Image (cartoon, rainbow, N blue to C red; front, side):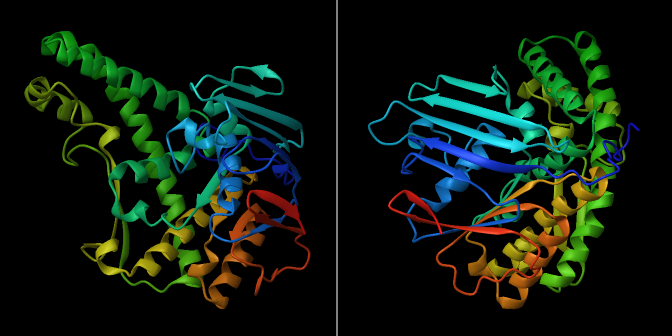
Amino acid sequence: SSGLFIRCNANENLMRLTELSLYNFRNLAESRLEFSTGFNYISGLNGSGKTSLLEAIYYLGHLRSFRTSKIQRLITYDQQKFVLFAQLYDHYQQLQTIGLERSVDAVGISKLNGNAQVGAAQLACVLPVLLIHPNSYHLLDHGPKQRRQFIDWGLFHVERSFFSCWQNYHRLLKQRNAALKSRLSQDAIAPWDYELSVLVTKLHEMRIRYLEQLTPEINIILDNLLQIKNLNFDYYQGWPKDLSITQALSMNFSKDFERGYSAYGIHRADLQIKIGKHPVHEVLSRGQQKLLVIAMRLAQGMLLKKITQNSCIFLLDDITAELDLNRRNSVFSLLGQINAQVFMTLLDLTGIEIIRQDIPSTSFHVEHGIVTKL
């Protein structure tokens, strides 16, 4: 199928990270860690290095950090490079190895099964990772880029043709913007407009279809975490609703020409999340916003499982501080239903309970960068 329902397997083949070796990553001591296929608890005081362990796993699946854009900050002080090596079983139960090396001058090696060089997209296919951390609520109150990325993460993992369309769109957009800055005429730019329009239509349809399936999943999870009335997820497509993208590009050409960039397209889309007519961040408390984002991320994992029969890894950084016992139990139960591998940081293991006794778990403690299996 060319639609969302692709890569379905008769049996449930779940991806699992089994082993991670770290060298000179942040403040973490050289370590070789073996993980549970279920829940992995990482306890320790603030500043001990427990979030750095999540960061290393995130880096394996994204080739970037969620905390900094500067490579030097990821390398242990006075060292020249960091190295990460991981073993995992993919969705087809094939053993995969990932090896990454980054030096202070940003030179790097990225290997998948010993083959260099691989890009972020290849690693993301092998190691899909969803992160929930204390600042995740910025998904709601920051600019639309994060919300576009939220939608596109899901599409990348469930829609076979998405990534190539997305790449081609941004390549053509860059070319059109360069043509605008070079002061080419509207007739000269028309071929770019045509090609962009074709890709915009495809990508727009993918996003709409994905959101139509994701929104009910979010609402189901919210029923367990947070009661919100009149919650709306409105997708703004990136150009006026009463125009086709072809019409929008043509009618706005003179303004684009003046500015030197394209004001309309899917790169301007947004997921507008409101309660009634008001943005959610103006109505909900900070704690409620965090619960909403937790529901949105869990829903992505749930939908991925439903559509592809595959799972992702969840990285949960200090979220238990936001949850009372009932909500914590609800989150754990939902993660059990998704059958996802979970890495969770917390200050201590007090009050942590596995809701389903058949879910395996392992506990680690981090102190002064030293990771100890309990």
